[in-house]
Amino acid sequence: MANNSTAAPKKQNQFLVVLKRLFKRKTAVAGAIILLILTLSAIFAPLIAPYNYTELNVKERLQGPSLRHLCGTDEFGRDLLSRLLMGGRYSLRVGISVVAFSLVFGVILGSLSGYFGGWVDNLIMRFLDIVHAIPGMLLAIMLSALLGNGFGNTILALSVGSINGYARTLRASIMRVRKAEYIEAAATIKASNARIIMSHVLPNSIAPLIVQCTMGCANGILSAASLSYIGLGIQPPEAEWGAMLSGARSYIRDYPHMGIFPGILIALVVLSFNLIGDALRDALDPKLK
Amino acid sequence: MALIEVKELKTYFKVARGTVHAVDGVTFKIEEGKTMGVVGESGCGKTTLGRTIIHLEESTDGQIFYDGKDITRLRRKELNDYRDKLQIIFQDPYSSLNPRKTVEDTIQEALYLSKRFDKSQLAGEVTKLMNMVGIDQRLRLSYPHELDGGRRQRVVIARTLAMHPKFIVCDEPVSALDVSIQAQVLNLLQDLQEELGLTYMFITHDLSVVRHISDDICVMYLGQLVETSPSKELFKHPYHPYTEALLSSIPSTDIHHKRERILLKGEITSPIDPEPGCRFAARCPYATEACKQPQKLEEVEPNHFVSCCRIHEIRGI
Image (cartoon, rainbow over all chains, first blue to last red; front, side, top):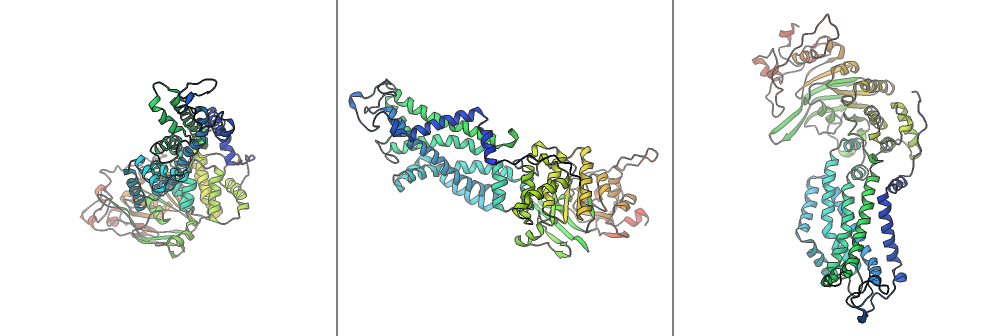
């Protein structure tokens, strides 16, 4: 055979390639910067916070933003900025953990269900139907009451209800991919089921999930607030964005700043995840170089 | 001994309206190093036949032999021993390559799974295979969507060869390609056959392709074999009325001998629960009452088999 070839291009680390392509997109950079600032401020909150976030100061209650209190104070006179900073530690963790937890289980159940079909699919889907039949919030309250307070239990309680959505989205996407000839071709070269799922099916069907994840993060934060509202989950005087937002409801007419600031922060988290998620989906697709 | 032999092979599918007789009692042999062409119109079961032989579909009845050993009913583990030897090249190289894998990844995965090499040898073997099928090394990290149809099909061929096969089912490997590329890929397949001693089952509806590449030809109609013979002989003496009509559809290049085209009337009958008897009878110009009996494959000349009860009458042999 004639060797008429020119030099082969050098193989690069796949992870670095995706990262490079990710940060070529301005939206991803913007999202990453927002997320980085929020994360850093949460980590260093005790150092940056100008006041003790649980300290009551009834004389200065319900003040609007001023130089003394940059984000104003709440109904007990606590400094909102300090509470927002400290609350970020909890809220960011909840948002990310809920997504991570339900994603892992959603991907496992969705892949098994979509790839194998038949009775496996039936079993998993009927089980998820049962879980789905219970309203999400009710399920979370039930589990939370059953398991007790604590970070891990709260995450578990909030995640179980959203596994269904991830599993179903992935299942639908996989059922489309599974019929492709390259899946059959993989079987003829003796690829195991695990290999076919991990390296052929999932990379081609995961895209719809990425968008869903970015939205799931906000849901996690807000549901956590509902839990603490009825006395489950995190307890006052601990700070948390969702709880601050729902607590501000009664003051929304006269003191809107109480709701606006935590609201903006939750929106920023969602926005940053969304920007990164969209760009990540594109960066992972070799057709959109 | 024949490398591949099938006896009375049947593949049925259950559907709502009954049973589809996709492959219905097919018998033939393929000698090692030869090419068997399988022709017939769309839906005649030629693809199902190929897929059944390499165990992508489960056979309903009959036997498949590889090198004299019965491989019809294999358990998963036993099947894995034959997977390497029996490979397939799919029709459409646009859907048979994973869009998220580079050329290198695709070939390397097959090499790795064939378990013939150490990890350190894989990259070198990929280079060898790429040279063998004629893909430039600069395309090593390209994705399928960056390649044209011919190059994609070369990648598919390289992936197949990575398993070190003996027998390859080529399921219309060139019909999705531009005419200008078709010849290149066909020549590549022939070169590889010579070099590696491969045995092909070449499925196509393109008669000029099958004439170019096959040693023997099977003509299928609605799941059954109607005629099989060495390639040259078949083109010289197409005995079965269906083969005759099929071959008459090839445009002639000789202006002095205008070929008489035989236009078939009627529709192809349904493959769902078909009547016994000749499947072609409904469209056959020679059909009589006798054609309602089940037909047998008969050797009318050495190695030339025809399945038609009236063949002696109508051809005078």
